[in-house]
Amino acid sequence: MTRKVLLTLSAALFSSFLASQEMGFEEYNPESTLVVPGNPVTRAKFPFIDVHSHHFRMPTQDLSELVAAMDTLNMAVMVNLSGGSGDHLKGAMENVKKHYPNRFVVFANVDFDSVGTPGWGERAAAQLEADVANGASGLKIYKSLGLRNNDINGNRIAVDDPRLDPIWEKCGELGIPVLIHSADPRSFWDPMDSLNERWLELKLRPRRKRSDTDPAPWQQIIDEQHRMFKKHPETRFINAHMGWYANDLGTLSTLLDEIPNMYVGIGAVIAELGRQPRRAREFFIAYQDRVVFGKDAWQPGEYPTYFRVLETADEYFPYYKKYHAFWAMYGLDLPDPVLRKLYYENALKLLPGVDRSLFPNP
Image 1 (cartoon, helix red, strand yellow):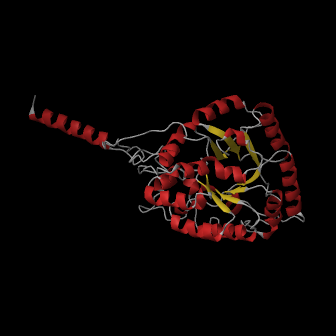
Image 2 (cartoon, one colour; image 1 turned 180 degrees about the vertical axis):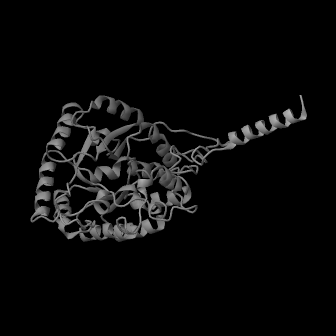
Image 3 (cartoon, helix red, strand yellow; image 1 turned 90 degrees about the vertical axis):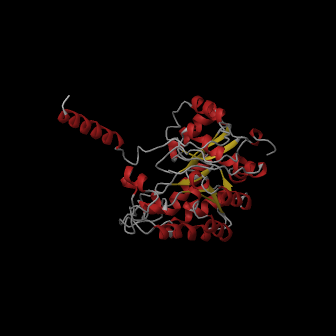
């Protein structure tokens, strides 16, 4: 074999080697070599209420498969936030009452399309009252309020728009909670550069990127929400995703102190809590009466990460969705009394009509 042939083969092998090293950030997912004790948890220590789930097909859905999966997790009650209104909500309630009357709670929703027409607020409140009479146990407000909903004149509807006041007042009058999602993580409004923790998520899902003019600054939307909470002190609000302050528990603590009718749910923010175990543990103990369990999207395989973060003292274990968190998780090792409040006791205080016999010492 000539020297020229050898050089050609070497160059080809080297090029092949370089090509094998090419990968995007999305593909780089090394397995940790750290050896530490681990206690994976596939079933919650106590029966729990998931206050944040979505099942749009509940009027026709076969609930038996859903309940079987809930049982494996020790989920006693699921709150379906996507109950809709009118006939759709009636259909969901009929399906639940016929098959599993004590395993599901359904929340109603409001249609904001006609805000600005005379008497809209009163009509919306009347429809909500009818939905509650038909079985709804609460009201879910989607993030479209503040982001995408416009009034009849094409103007963005602020979260604290006074035309919506009859709805919040009606919820207080009926004694039902409002679970509300406003805005999205603040990083979606930040420059999409090397300093943005959510760069990978925004790269994979570019429609999530926002700006101060699309449709408004993040802080403005969040402030609108808090003003609305304060304006309606007789109504109990569950702030979804910990109000996007799970990465700033000091500020969240201040807000909870200022707004006694505000509670927070942990859906979709367990990655923030799992990277600050000491601080998060202090927070959960200090505000143990104000936090409820929820996960958001129904993916049964993701619940064990929540259980492990909340219940164990494990170190450095993986999160289930890299584009949400490229860091590892640590357990909070919450005391049993705090876990009980998080898993079901606080939700029992907020949700009307839940079967208390499903829980120990309710």
